Length: 409
Ligand SMILES: *Cc1c(COP(=O)(O)O)cnc(C)c1O
Image (cartoon, rainbow, N blue to C red; front, side):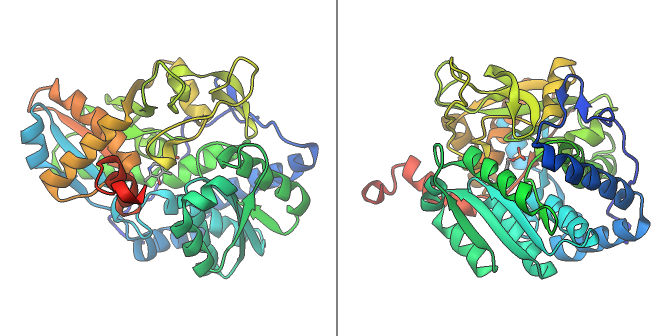
């Protein structure tokens, strides 16, 4: 075990016995899944308290994923932006280039411990699919990834990457042929296959115990950042900021800081603006409803149908949000911000030009809001921003948005 990766087996702020965070969360699933979910809950609780499991997880996080990731003081960006010092937690430097692997390593280890030979996953942009296919290759497991046909066509490089890693990508044609339909089909597969199959969910959503389990696997982000702030800045940040799609990188960063005097900020994708429908701001504009096995804030139309979402960043384009974030918002534990496509693009360009770091478009939303908050603060104060992933995957989107690829679109 490495001295520089915090090793924390405690679980604070747990949901109630039925998986409720406040009124949110729970376990809304087919009768046939109740047994497997209970079995998963027990296996996770047992594994989490087992030093051998934690030791192997830490070894992999260190030597395979590349943790601890650096905490970087973006001094040039801070000066140019004005106001508070900006610190970046560099999840972009992990193996596969985003935070998602912290979770798939954890669930992959748990699948192996439970004797499952096959893993399945849902994916939108393909990032969680790639992170799952990566650990399936590493652990020698069969891997099937459900992906809406729309997304298969839009995200071909990730589809090919998953195939290269040995995964089978299943194109989903139902509904709008996007992420929510892939989620439904993955759950349907699991109903029929749970005997030998482990369902690796990609964010802090799904029926209990997934939101808790995924949070715990990502908490290493905030645990490291907390220790690194104390070491490098000599104090904790005044504000911690993360973007929210489903909420896994946000819970990973914010959960370990929630008992400190730190303002916790979640940033949603405002797309073309919060006043229309072309956004993905479930916390700001949604209402309570059930999706993907839990009660949470959802974007629905007047007929109660899941609303089409929009964001320039595919990873934030999800019509729901993790139930714990919904509860934290209601409890006043969380501040809510939003960044539009244009604001995210501007932040993307500024970090790239100013620090030589090309962020993911998802992370650029956190940057946009973080820089806005920092600008209103004092230079002796500190803003910690989760740089959840790197931007290589977004080159085409950015070049098109900048009009540099006119003929290609
Ligand atoms: C998937 C993804 C997100 C959004 O997912 P969360 O569960 O909200 O963290 C954010 N950033 C990157 C780089 C991603 O790949």
